[in-house]
Image (tube, rainbow, N blue to C red; front, side, top):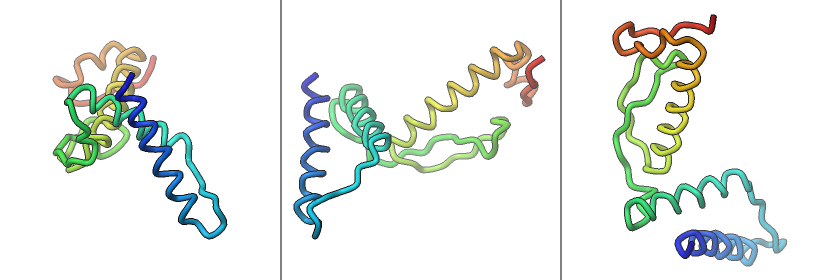
Length: 114
């Protein structure tokens, strides 16, 4: 919980600075974006012992919606976490829709739902 508290306080401090530096004393906060950043930074800090959210890594990303072709791309750890979670969700849903999709590595294609 301390890690989460620190990440939330970092965001509050950043927002306070933006408010102080703004000519009209306000700022716009995209709470969905901010929540994702706080959550990912918290998970990454817990998993790796430090916040490496902005360090770059090479991961495989899909070239289109079929998910059959993956290409290497250099992204931040935060983006890699998001991309990996999205791929796992999409892949698991396609496998539930059609059991033939469990063999995608052999067939190299996805099948639509029956």
